[in-house]
Image (cartoon, rainbow, N blue to C red; front, side):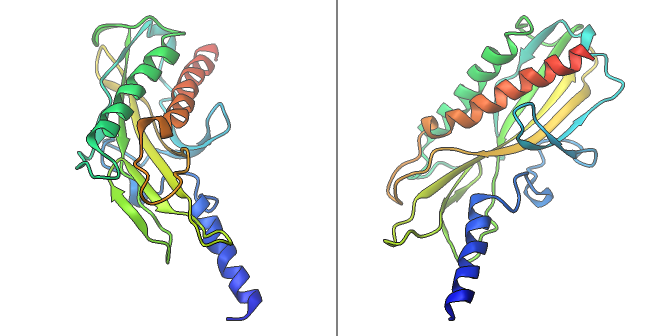
Length: 223
């Protein structure tokens, strides 16, 4: 292969693996957790991240005076593996719950269940798939994808951790959908194929998601 062609191929592979080509979750990666994806549109989160989102233009956010955070789901239900053990999966959902309560709780009192005046947050960690050709993921399960990144000059590959979420926001009085969002993020790279993924590797991603949800609520309330 000519050097120019080889470099071009490497650049394309780099863009694909790092997610430059698609920063949002593609329709064929939707998990089925949300009932209707047809209304989703590309948007920017308060932090500037690319998301797929829909907000009911008729929703009266100000009538919602407290928030109930449902336990985060794993959807579809995964099987743990040696690379991503059950302890990691449990840690991810547990931390997502904590982050949502911490961030949204800054703006709304936490309720113990749905009801009139309560905004219900129903979130899931969902499947992510790889579109990279020629670079095999060594671990593919719903919840997380740890895929081989582009080779360095020494031939060693870092391992990329990717996480996706789908969340719906409901009026606790009538279960009507107020808003929904689908997004993904990249956590800490793993050093090599043998390193086991931990919840700590994606905590920064989850923190960003929770913070953005709270900032989105504040932005809507101020309108």
